[in-house]
Length: 382
Image (tube, rainbow, N blue to C red; front, side, top):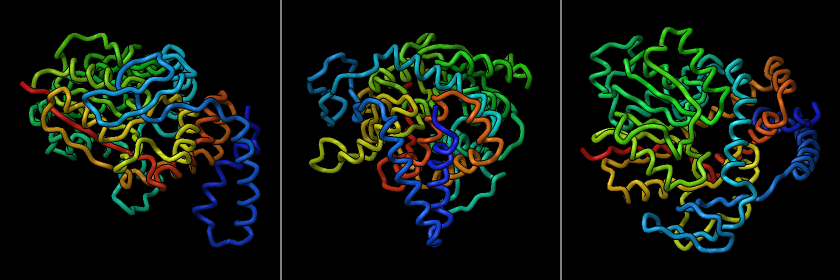
């Protein structure tokens, strides 16, 4: 397990870089701390991971993967984790860390949405997480009734969502919000038994057990029939999915005719003309994040768009919201540096601590333009 001093060094490195950039004494301390932390990170670095996504499932170790749905061509390397091992790692990671997140940040396990260049207060961050839900609905053309405090039949009718599947539901924050405000019936799936149990417990406590339910299930093999849901909702879960083609196909399968699909996810930047892969330093950065958060293979926003186009889905739209989420990770780091946050981390397991150590890498990825926070929406034909 990481030592207390090591964990402090890595978190404080980013915090002081942003807040004491003109302090010469702090700059010297920062440089010394950086050297120590980089040495530690090199020791705990896990296996490299393919960063450009395989468009089709494969166990091959040295073939070129292509698909008509995408123009990106990549040469896969041997996976160090099987899909089963990856799923187990994801489940264990969230079993271990979800309670700490809820205790500090509440029941929404996703980024907040902020005005660009805003300097939000601590109390603004949870509001920003709710705003992320509403902005996603607005972007998809579903919500013109933002701001109401409670759900009504008129609101539910206005956004035309009566049934929702929450793919990668966390502890159910989005589902309970959509049920409470818009009257939608929601079913959530997660790989984490802890999350499913906690999500159902919170639903019962909030009087929503008749509207929402949660279970352990695989996003690539959803336990639902074809065309069941008016809204297919994936809020920051796609980055965990190893087979993006199968993932998108499954989202489209469970969507009802005329239903909407909303994908909010982490992507890498689009490749430029003539580029076949990310730069080596970009891959190295993302590999470290992969190892910390149990991410398999990254893809770009354009890759998602091409996959949706290949399924003849309609009204496909995409946007880069990276600037709108910029305040989020610094806020998470600051919360980890509080006494409550820091002691909670020390009581947690190694997976949660590794996630904490990777938070400055997420900020670096956003600042350098390697990581993109993307929203992609579309509609299934009638």
